[in-house]
Image (cartoon, rainbow, N blue to C red; front, side, top):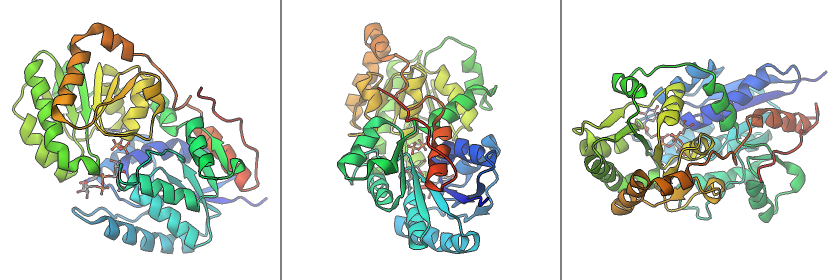
Length: 382
Ligand code: UD1
Ligand code: UDP
């Protein structure tokens, strides 16, 4: 029997986390041959995830370069993938989400006549300038994809409104919840001594992450908001595993580095990050993945952005959009730190993004696309 070859291409930390359960599933499935390609858009942050999930890419384009432009990244990515696609001749290529890697890989596949499978399809913020360039990337991938794997019914509705055919869309749930379920089985301690000490106390912890490109010009506001909160609440700890982008670090570090109750670390390995998330009482973030993970752990999230392509947890009441203005961030976080009723109202554990079986549904939908199996019923989130 013909065993179709499925190539998974990824390049950044969140893509790695979200494709890991699919790569694992494909490796165990005799119907497929699987090839793993890292573009290396990220380096250290990607190596952390590969080692955590024990994934060894067959190819690594090693694209990360400090300060490179989006055009340089995308063009190097397409050139590198062109050679690999020629050599491997896959039947389908999986891309995940909205990164430059995903957009370039979808285009490279399309140019070579290879079917594109889009994992985490159909999220829409409504503005191609925010998040930039991610919203446009995700829309471009949709135009090129043969199979759209929507995490939620709202994501499918977005695709239907854009006239993508219902038969080409499966609702799978988000594979990040599969990864989170897997991580919950790992036992891990913190390498950082301050985090390890904190883990064994009852002190309150606020987890902060920030990295979005469109927030780089307001990083000072975000850094100053964390500074002000830390000064205002000396008995609350603020944990910041900082993205390695120097444009983030060089602005945020000076604002917070001399405060005893702010713990700045390098990016944490996924197991330690999930432990920290579980240990936290409140999350301030501009991350996409963290917006999906925190609600399923019942953690209130304040999203430091002006819009989001992930409305489900906002509707459930666990996530609130607060923008990037310093005084608004301080006011909204203060409310949750001081007002028990406001905090409890946001602290419901909800799972609109998945049930831990998204990778099974993903692989079943790919099997149908490639003529070696049948789909599973859609994930039902409302
Ligand atoms: C990228 C994605 C974004 C995603 C984010 C996840 C695009 C356009 N952006 O943004 O959608 O939310 O990844 O984190 O695809 N760096 C390191 N080591 C690393 C990783 C990054 O030093 O392991 C530094 C480098 O200087 C690099 C910079 O961070 O140039 C920015 O990386 P890049 O991938 O261009 O953008 P992100 O902001 O990480
Ligand atoms: N994450 C991690 N270590 C960290 C910070 C985040 O493993 O120090 C994980 C987090 O659990 C989530 C993903 O990285 O799954 C989110 O990545 P990021 O915020 O960089 O990108 P986005 O999701 O916004 O694209």
